[in-house]
Image (tube, rainbow, N blue to C red; front, side, top):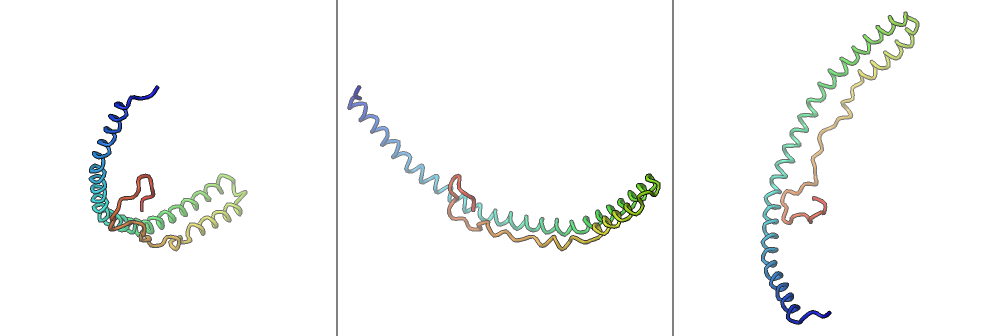
Length: 139
């Protein structure tokens, strides 16, 4: 079956009209996307600054809280060791004492040297001119 030339011409005409109508819409969409990306750049920078401030505060607050937790855990180890020694009738006093001392030493050791300052993120654009590709990585 062959299509009539009239039908093919009509289809081609409609396709041309659709393409002509889509051109300005594509341009407008690209323009709006560029405006949105330009507006998002400063907001991302503000969000980065605020997140860095909050992370720094969290790190500063974590140190004293961790020290308190270590002290309380060491006290708990001591109480537990005493109770285990009583329950076992002193039969394992040396082993309980040795383990208790090791745990208390481990808890007394400061781990603050493992927590460093919050690193400044470097992957956020501050002046985005073009939006990222759809489905592509976010810069």
